Amino acid sequence: MPAGESRHPSQPPPPPAADPEEAASWLWAEIKAESRRDAESEPALASYLYSTILSHSSLERSLAFHLGNKLCSSTLLSTLLYDLFLNTFSADPDLRSAAVADLRAARSRDPACASFSHCLLNYKGFLACQAHRVAHKLWTQSRRPLALALQSRISDVFAVDIHPGAKLGKGILFDHATGVVVGETAVIGDNVSILHHVTLGGTGKAGGDRHPKIGDGVLIGAGATILGNVKIGEGAKIGAGSVVLMEVPPRATAVGNPARLVEGKEASKLEECPGMSMDHTSFMADWSYTI
Image 1 (cartoon, rainbow, N blue to C red):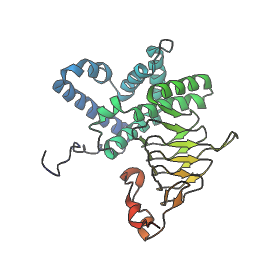
Image 2 (spheres, rainbow, N blue to C red):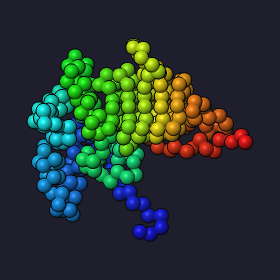
Image 3 (cartoon, rainbow, N blue to C red):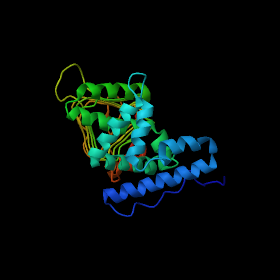
Image 4 (spheres, rainbow, N blue to C red):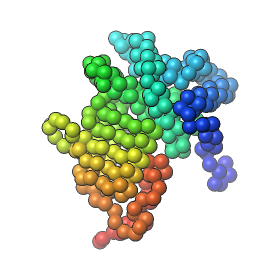
């Protein structure tokens, strides 16, 4: 490959309109077209792609089928889970629009994401997020034993442990996702990106509202830990490996253990949306080391 040439496939054009129905239809057409191309280029995957994507009439049917097969066990049957996922997705249009936003988030923010269909089939962070949305719906409907059983299967299969009480916005990217833990009263806003081994936890065994509140557009680096009912402001950035115990203002950067705000030039007050730009190192221009 010539020097400087990107391995990341060119981005597809945006959907024709902001209307959720049109956006979902456009995305589903893209996913089916990608799957047909993959089936032609790799015949070994043709049957898998047909049964998981090409035989289905909509994104929610494909997603329900795929999640049912991923999360089933000898006693929690795939057919039961398929009906559960499909009925929940079909009854709540917001869940489908959230799935569309999450797919677009992965495709636009992760240079390793080769296609929408690749994300739908293989990104466990995306799959865990969609399964959690169903578990959260069950939780709000007071079907808590089933919600907790689903949480347990998500944790077993995807190594992502999100309590069904946690609230997630749209456009969420769990990048790699392994080891992510999100507590019961945590809230995650829209267009947030979270790397692997991130914990949004409590500070002890006290009950009540005890978990972090993550604002829109936040970027949380790998291995970061945020504890307690603290607010991470809109557009903030949490450095990898940081331990955050205090509130982080909007558009600020927090790094270290315990985390402290990066101070310096005006650039430290972030102008871009870190959760979408995925820029983990812009604060380095303002960093100074004391020896």
